[in-house]
Length: 402
Image 1 (cartoon, helix red, strand yellow):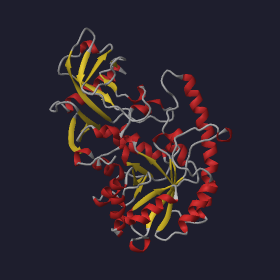
Image 2 (image 1 turned 135 degrees about the horizontal axis):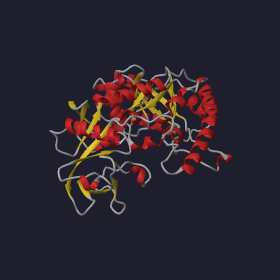
Image 3 (image 1 turned 135 degrees about the vertical axis):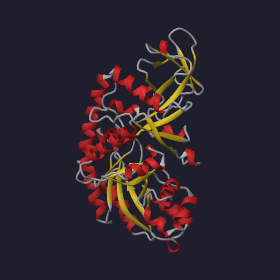
Image 4 (image 1 turned 60 degrees about the horizontal axis):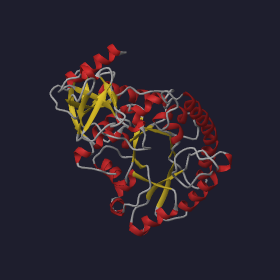
């Protein structure tokens, strides 16, 4: 393993020798391999790309050009509209409800855009807000998707396993909301989504925590069985009122399991293209690390220590070690517990730290996928030991959507 990591480090160092850190790269062979593996795991059902996990138009387009990939799941309406208008996709599902009045007004004023973008809803209040921006008679029909909460609530709801998203949890509630949407002018219910975050977004093999891993796997099995029945019932209830074009579910961590649900017509994935560290804790499938960032060693504060400039690119979520970037190459580096990863400097210890010299590169992997792109204006795309092209991130194109 050490020999292979040395070869990888040497390859990345040679490819980027002309660059000054900090910078980020995407290894195209790993990216394409991950895209193919995710499509294979979807077993013939289309994979919708989660743009939040990529945040670079060129790479979103690269994935969509591959067999098995179709459509974008955007994280905001302005982002979805931008991706449609720039020709990246003609099928953009907004993953979260929006109250962006300006973006809604722009959507309502553009029939072609309205035909390509689907809004997410879980409450009639969201429909009321749209009508207040632009009444039904003065706009094209707007496409909407119902967000079914996929969390598991055993013991009569006294326990909540999963994230807190939609208030629509039961099949009955889904059917009732679908009936309401169907009766309102100016809207068309075309989809249903149920994202099982407790399965797709939670690693079942946390390193060094075997008991926790067993508990997570037990909960995931129970949650999957419950959701299989409830999602099927919800889809049936909604179909009584709407001709659904799609039923979306899953994420990188559950592509195979979610695609096996007969009620699901498409799955979503995105993080698996880059292969961040959070997915090192999954047993079923671990993507090949494709995205990384390099920082330069700028000083040696003491024996067995090396300090890089920057490095504190922390991921969202609970404030714990799993959200810290991980020193990756060379092998044998670790963060210092009293300092962690810092905004302007990150001291490193470990067996490899003593051999590092001022000017050397240290390669890090981010804990989550697309959030890496909030720190850089461009991604250098590596093929073998060469940077073949450089593409802008959302930030590099002047966009900060959220």
